[in-house]
Image 1: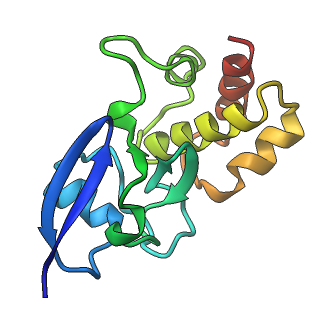
Image 2: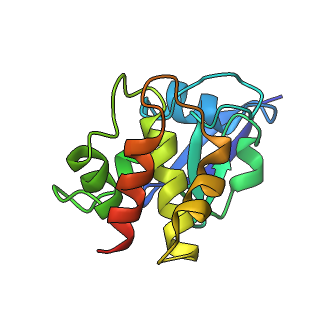
Length: 153
């Protein structure tokens, strides 16, 4: 039986009539058309579906929409302010930390949450923080460099 869910995504409130078993990833992509959040493994292992919930990185394939009512959800589409990119987004561009781009939204949101918690990390801390986000293209060096550069902003 469907029920009304009220979700706050990227600063906007959305009232949606949904099955209670609908995962956040499906809601974002299918209902709200926020396709920056990617579906990778579907089991929480790759990090492609990472979004922020109340500023914390979560894998949207592992959480029900009903679990995030009353919380602020931020997707890659809502990270910057207007036409301005977030410093993490800028650093990913500047350092070429993007190749195919599939993992990039989740990687950037995970990095954002990490830097909000540890503003001046060392390289080992960055490596540990991105451990749950897989990238098949870059080899991670440019991603690590970008996160460290963003921490200096």
